[in-house]
Image 1: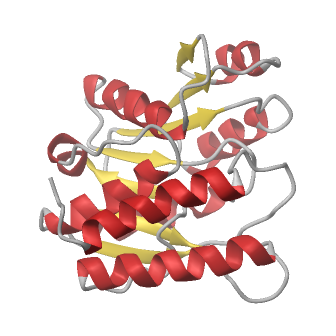
Image 2: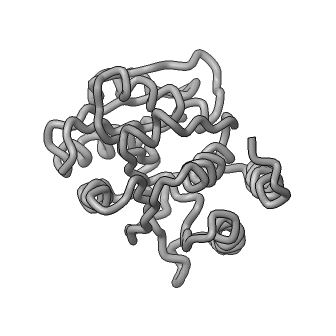
Length: 224
């Protein structure tokens, strides 16, 4: 397993779930550095993060998941991490799967979790938009990307050093994935279980529109 390793957790109003996520990550990846970015939370997220994380960053106002991931990745690089895992704070990702994502970096530069779209785990609306977005991203990068919007990922340091993606909200993850592929980095999909319980901060209309604009811009060849 690649070491040293850092785990970045973007967190918005995640007080009910954050401690459990951080604790499970420590159990799954002993010795990892836990970095929590509090994205303008209005509940006790910041206090909980200070109790369970090694590094806590705080935005005074909500700036978006992309901005939080970008800040957390910069902190991980500054700490000397050779690989970084990103995981949502709402508990939908099982931290026990993190070692499999990291192990996949033996063969690839970036490992992306793949959630099941069958059965009733993923809400129907998210299932449809996820399938369409993943197919479109796969066509752009000319590779299979079963779940382009999954935030449970592992990546080598060199990916974060060379890939600079714009976007402060959910479109950031799609943008980053496309730019990583176009920069020549290899991407592998790793099946991960998903539990939907805590409400998502993904706004169906506004955030879907941002993702669609990102995909359309790349399909039109406006890569910059």
